[in-house]
Length: 356
Image 1 (cartoon, one colour):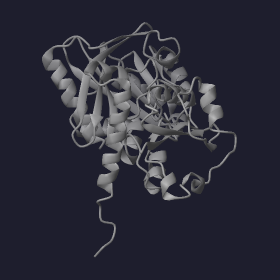
Image 2: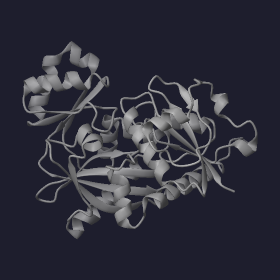
Image 3: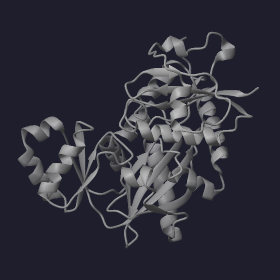
């Protein structure tokens, strides 16, 4: 029998459009002879819409939005099967950013006891919050760039203090980021105090917590990680933006970026990247998939930048390309992720929930 797969996409997030692009790419790659695919679309206003089974790959993003219908529902019971034979075997969350990639939806699926692809509640939430992530990396002994962070209230109360602290502890240029967002949304580069103030104002549009990172002259190297308790690494890839940095426009709009796969690296550097990627995977208690992003300096110093617990699957995305060059084509990658999700779910069912 075909496995019933629920594609969960859209979401109440600034990365809504990215999610739709990812969902479109997945429908074009998934094997409809093996899987029954059901769309579950969340509008940008947070309305859930469950559509009828897809008979073939979606042609456009608009089709994905319309396929799920127009009826609104936030009642969880409407997404539960009327009878066991209607139950979804696995849900593939394709939600980027807050309200999807941050552990919220993962928690809902855990409560509903539905297998789902990717990271669990803890890994998703820790991976979304760049400050918590950095603190865990520090605990694991992973080298990273210096940083300063604060919340909106602290900035509003004493902007001068934070400006002085940043200038004292970091060196220009710095990068200003919302702590809880991905896809380079809200990120700005600042070369002086005036630009820093403007960058913080921009980042605060998207989050109450801001992280300021030390700029570094280095190559941007990414590694894909796949697995549960015994993760494996892909070949490494190098990002070469043709702009100041790898922003949202370069990632998803104009493709104004060169991707070199595999990256040209010394064997020792490559081995250290793999080891650090696995260490980051494990310290966050990840499962399924992760893209680990690093800086490699001219002296081969390796600094971990961040991990992405739900890397995109768009035509411009690095993660599937890394695995394709490792010998795992996109359709097989999706199958592997589904298998990993089922394995993890089955292991959880072995846990005792009653006290003798």
